[in-house]
Structures are given as C-alpha cells and as structure tokens.
Length: 407
Image 1 (cartoon, rainbow, N blue to C red):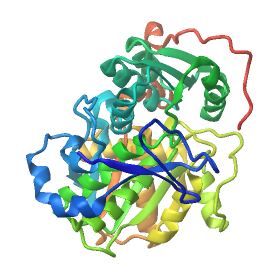
Image 2: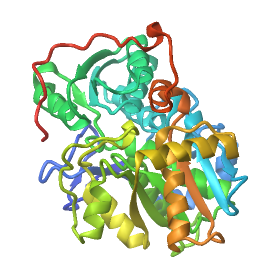
Image 3: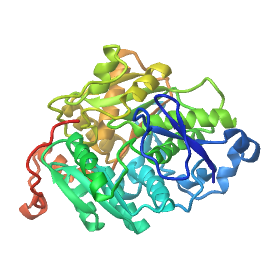
Image 4: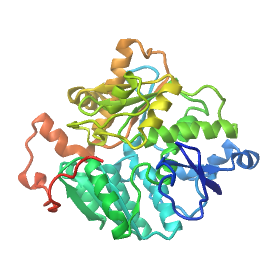
C-alpha cells in the first residue's frame, strides 16, 4: 500500500500533512486530493503486480492508502460488451456490496476513519451513499449518522436502519441534508464524510478508472459516460488516469472524453457547461426519478466542468421518460437490471449517437452505478404496478421543523 505524502487543495494547491484527519482546505474550502510519491511507486511497482491482488478494488493497494482495509469485497465489477450497440461496454457497478458504486468510496473513507481513530461519522445522502456508509460503519465498528430526503427509495432507508446507523429523514433535498450535517457536526462530534468534504471517498472511486484500464488491456476507451450527481467518480477516474500515466501503466495523451449525464429536472452541470461558466448555479426545484442525480449543486462542480472541458467531452441532460426507457432497454437487451442512473447513461448514449457527437465505431464505456433492485418502489409507481400496502408503507420521518434552505 502507498504511503501518503500529504493532501493537496484542488483550488489553491496548498498542501497539508496527512498525520491527522482532514476535511477540506483550511484556506479556501477546496476539496483535498491525496498525494503519493508516484516516482517511488513507479520504481517499485509494476502494473502486472495487480494480478496477484484480490478480486476487488484492493488489488490496486499499491495506489491506495497504507491502512488495514475495511472491505466487503467491493470493486472489480464486470465490464460487459453490449449485445445491441457495437463497441459499447457496460461497467456494472450495481454488483458492488450495498448495490451501488458508493461502496468503493465508503470502503476507503471508513478504512481511514478507523485508521485515524474517528468514532462518529455523518453524511447527507440521496440514497445509496447513506446505505454504504451504514454498512461499512457496521463493518468497521464505528457509529454513523445519515441524513436523507424523506422521499428516497425505501430500500435506501431500510438498509440504513438495518445496519444500525442513526437515520434522519429530511423534508427537502440532499442540499438541505448537507446543511444539517454542517450545522451540527461540531456540537455532535461528528466527522463529516460528505461528498468531497473528505479526501478518501475519492480514492475508492478512482479505482473505477484503474479497472477500466486493466479490463481493456491497459488502454482507455474513446469516451466514458458517467451519471453525475456529486461527480466523485468522474473526478476520481481523472485522477486515476493521471496517476497511471505517471506510473507508466498507460500511455500519455490518450484519455477518454468524459461525458457527464444528468436529468433534465436537475441539470446544473450541462447548464453551466453550455453557458461557459466555471461553476454551476444552485438548481431550483430539483426533481427526477433518479435519486442519485438529484443534486442541485455539486461541491466539486468546478472540477467536474474543468475535466469535461479538458477531455473534449460534454454534459447532457435526459428526461425521466428517457431514463425509464433506458432502464427497460438495458434489462431487455442486455440482461442488466439497472438503476435509473444507469438508464440515464444509456439514454444519453443514444442521443449522442443521433447527434453525431459519438460514432458507433467509438469505443465507449457506460457506467451503471447501481442495482435496479434498490428502486423497486420507484419503478412500480412509474410503471403503474400495484404493490401490497405493507410493501410500500414508509417508516415514520423525524420532526425536524420543516425544510432547511439550500446552502
């Protein structure tokens, strides 16, 4: 495993020692990157060495923090060739523990939380991150506090409660949940593991980039379609590509176009990109059936936009109807029961083929970030499927005094 040499701010470039847990840059609040001595790693570690590692994301231990992992077997998910679209590969991260790609980030975040001696962790969640935090906190023997909008899919709520975490349901959006964590963390003694509010969830998510490269014979595709809420996976993959170039594991200068996919009911990144802005604006009245895409303003929006532009990629918004059509097509044509976010990525792929931004000859990787089984209540309601009342009864929400305004 890699020895951390320090943290680096994504905004101002300031560096910080890694002996104690850090959240964000103390100067400007920028998200922090974990930095390693890549020159030393290049001398001592070859890409072939990963073959001896476990069939999980921890096969890339050489570029992950030097600590005893908290693992449930996350990562190294299959990348399946599409049966309908030539040159399209589907990376199915719905097969991770807790049914989503959030397992990757929470594995590294909880690994380092335990390493630093933290005991109470808190995060807002649109659904899957909360379930992953609860599960990995249970595995690590730590206490978790999860804040979710009260209308998240019921599976997300139940897994949090089953794992023994403290759940608060909020009459609002993930931004409202985030404000609650920010306002109470000092008083409650919580360490904030919100998206990009600590540096190690990014380290777990970057393993998606390592897996894409390894599974493609240490090369990269022409484009990657990524359903984007907080965008940690997209940022993490870009970091992975930079690391692999420095390590000599992939050729320089052949990075893919990074394509950010959002829902048209909550599309701050496409709007900012096409208006030529460096950061997004808060999206008001955010709504979409894809709970993971209902993020009105990502904390790392400026990083996402920079990566999309650097890569020659784009950002695209699709409707809920297109998302659900994508879910059905992926199930009927590919045999993959995808989360709505995966359906959004497929809908975006079809649009980009029609517009000519992508050609059918382009090698494209599409990420399905979650299992459709976690959204049964969402699908049932949309498709008009009747369910027993007991199956759809929601747990009572806590009285928190109404909506808390966006921050």
